[in-house]
Image 1 (cartoon, rainbow, N blue to C red):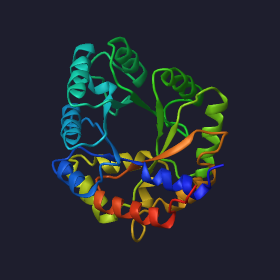
Image 2: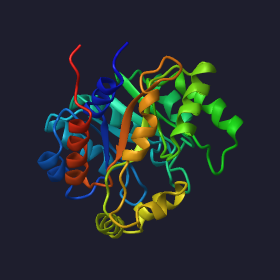
Image 3: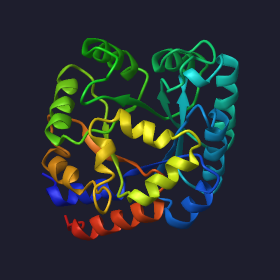
Length: 283
């Protein structure tokens, strides 16, 4: 059996960062993030899907492993989807993350992640990694049986799951065990915020134009107020709660997916501290 501390070290070494497509993101990634850290680039209606694809292309050009969000409601049709696929292929990007998206109205024929996944499959893409979302605490607007049915269908066209933010480690573990027992056998990346200061969060919220970051926080259970306690937020407690389950045979919890809110310097400093706390052990 692999020692628990070594397993956690491997998870910390291979975690991914989610970044927002702002003007300074490219420079800050290059400055603070090692190329061993995989990246995802979000998509939001105020910024537009083009900003997501363009940033992904630039980061790939710097040698990063990057997966842009393909937001179903922001893509018009199969023609535009095909154009994005070709652009990503041209720069060597072999990973995408497919979401339904937050747009109030679809831009075209795609209304949810499943419809885009099916279209993506039909055009013969060459992506080796396709992520989909998971909801350990359920969804505000979708009944649990609907979530389960959608996850089962999407899982057949995906290679991993990244969860929405959940602060309840037992709930995450229980959900991971349940979906595996029900036949969804994809590796799971647990979504959590990085070490984010209150000041940085407020600056990001203002920079987003319409308060995207705060709107995101308000949608996550218990998340909004956690960022406004003294000192900001740290994911250490959640990681400690998840530690016993990482690598266990009854679930597929394998990695962490860090929502950085573009606090890249602080998030990377936190990761290095955690690696020192949980060093790799000799076999």
